[in-house]
Length: 286
Ligand code: MN
Ligand code: MN
Image (tube, rainbow, N blue to C red; front, side, top):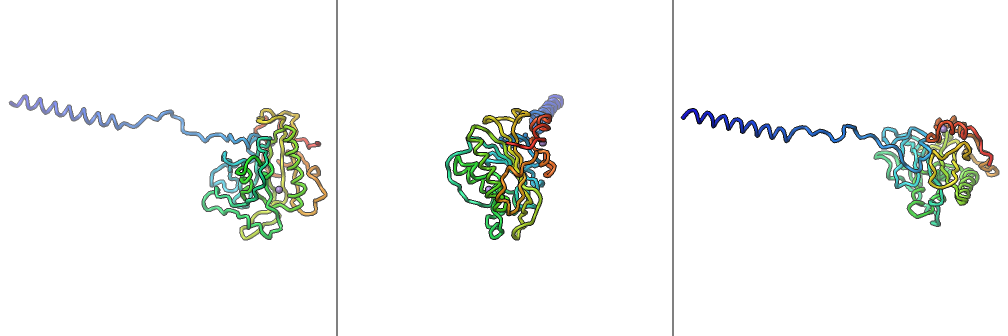
């Protein structure tokens, strides 16, 4: 009588142990698939083909060098949340960006800025005496309405004097599109240096000068590795003042090296160092 009961108890205990063991096995910690943590993806934006000029990142903590380079935007910018203007804009220009749509003229706040940041309004410039100066020009983005309209976001705008914006600066913008219409592809970077004042209650910074670099490539879809020692590079730095109407962009040419000194940036950083050394030391004569 006693012996079979004891055996039954032993079998039940073994069964319970097996079930508990099986449940523990099912709930075992999962082995991760791939042991590498996810790395941030490299910047592959076409407008940054020649490299990032600054340490810009899209981290909200990096508020004064904040990278906006989503693929829906037809240019890449570094925004400065203290100055309320872009530090620089960078864009590709070839025939594929040019069409026939009219200037949309819809200057407006950029809702894509991080929560809590002031969104500069078009009206903030009213009565300031300064133009709403595009870094990436409206006329470089005429293939469709949406693309053109993106250039009127206030994060692409800096306060520019009329003589700078409408004469000297505009002259090189027109020359750029003339080059593109001969089949060239351009990689352009533009921004401001210094501060000669500020406008409005939000103290929107007015740069002392506006600079631009243009890398002239022979054909569309060029890469940084296609840049050679013979590649034409145009660099200018134009004082943001009145009274320069009788000057042209050619009067304000300088070397990229000189501009790197003035801005603290490293331009064309994706171009091999030995080639940068050659092309950045020359002043355009074209
Ligand atoms: Mn302009
Ligand atoms: Mn450089």
